[in-house]
Length: 439
Image (cartoon, rainbow, N blue to C red; front, side):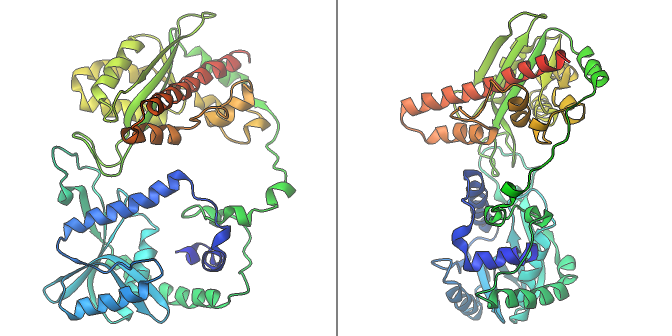
């Protein structure tokens, strides 16, 4: 898959791994998530034998072990490994039913994604060319319609989708690509010459971006154009705002596998909000905040607290409506006793990000309209750089990991940092609205 994205990435992975970008916590969590979900999915076919190698460099033993397990008549093999003419693969679950073999590859996603197909097609190619006929090949992924109550139901948590027809269409491509990429890695001294481009980010960000971009950013200055303000559009945007104006921001955590009753895979669990309220023009904004005491984050406590602040009249201002509005809709469905009040909030929402997407631009925004780019460009005296927690991902991770924090002082420091970060998000909205009013 590295080679399909870029042969240079494959070569660097094999011969220059030391120049790989340092993995951040979010990426580490993604990889760990995939490992954990793969292990959990094994419960769909319990009682199997594990062919995993002791180390990532011992897959030759896995190939030998897999062949031995098949010869011994084992019906379920986890991480079954196969090799054919220099191509190696390991499939998550291999199952024999009757006299036929079925392969299952597990993905920690809510559906089959385009990159999954060539990945599975490679596995199918290697397994069948190595001599094992497969009756079917399926992708196992999470069932996003599953809602947990009581013990986790693994059979309902996952769903399986056959992709065999799509894999068969790719077998010639896999054959030709395999030959080409074996030639790439056979040359230990000559790195493929590939210029940076869109392929560096598709289907995933390459982990050698830093190496490949060395010197490029210094040599080329990006022209972000001239300042642009659509005064008519800004005026129209401001005219729809009604006092009191509630600047709101949520923070949430989520896990792939639901941990509590009423949760589903990937559910965004709101644990914090900040609200700055402008009661009238020129009046100093009031600040309200909520931060859940425990990591379970009671959704009922969250929404009841929020509704107590937002009242029934006035504009509810968000920055990026695509986050807060879906969370409110989910809470409305979960707590129908508050459906009318939550719908009232939803009906009053206005997105402050909208004017910065197309009607207000400065070179300092660097072609972006996220609040992390817009705020320092237009209100330089405010910054996230000095905060202990400076972005939503860090906030989510910090709160979620509080459950493992034993030292009370560490807990209080983290909670103070979370409150400070979320408060800045809504104060930033107040200041950016002031910028628009001056235009």
